[in-house]
Length: 82
Image (cartoon, rainbow, N blue to C red; front, side, top):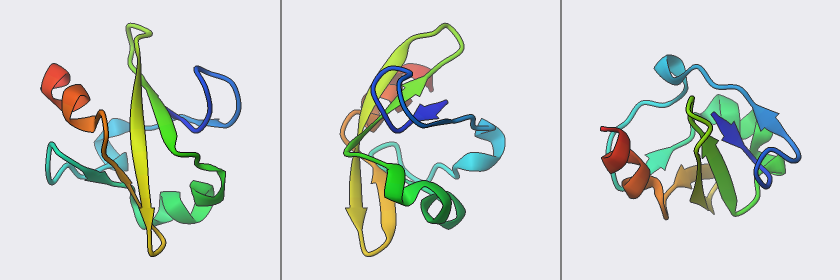
């Protein structure tokens, strides 16, 4: 579901959406600590969320104090798929 690079190029990690995120807000979404620890150094400023129909959604990242949040574009993605 996520990729740290452009449209399938570079590092990609498959995600089981039932266990990866706990949605607390449709405005921002925090990455779990285990994902940040494992992939945080590889994450750029944008991730691309790939859904089953192969659509790709760019979502901006915010990185602060060892935490990573999906922000810009996340609300549009959450609205569309809610």
